[in-house]
Image 1: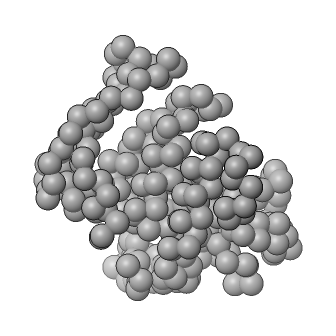
Image 2: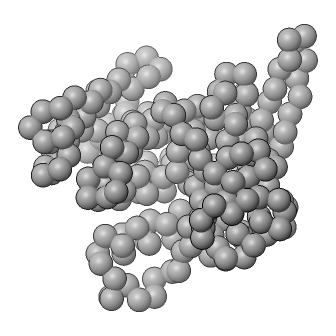
Length: 243
């Protein structure tokens, strides 16, 4: 998966804003990995949902915030800055596997997924292409690490498991949209069978139905019914790790 990722700004205005912010980050930042909706947009070459911020993982999270602020970013919270181009950037610290026995199981799952995403993300050139009214092209380029499709699926599904109990249960739809885009991008939808399964919840007043990809898009919709989330996705989702 290493190499070059090219994004055409004129065709992906929302994603272009996020990618432009990444190309402007200082080179002296400690090692970090892009995750979240921005990473999903980069991997899927477009955003299926609206997202205004960037998320990242770093072992040296404190150092990363320090470098960002010293380079002109405005600190908003302990681990969030506003980049010089006005994009919020969250930095999540990862700590490895130490202390898992004393942490809640859901936190262990988050930490393992984050650690996997950090360790498997390749360094790639990210190229943002712009075309002006005269048809001339220009580009902004940076080299960074973006979480892989399998790692993003792991992070997203872990988020879904606890989303209804979080401060923002409405973000469940964003999680479902990201899963749809990632699975469609992986190419396994056309190669494996499907299995319907349901995840019951006392607080999730949504029902999401994901249909097999038809043409270039994965059709999905969300509607209220019986406080239930239903997904039609591959029963062999582990095949994603082979792509």
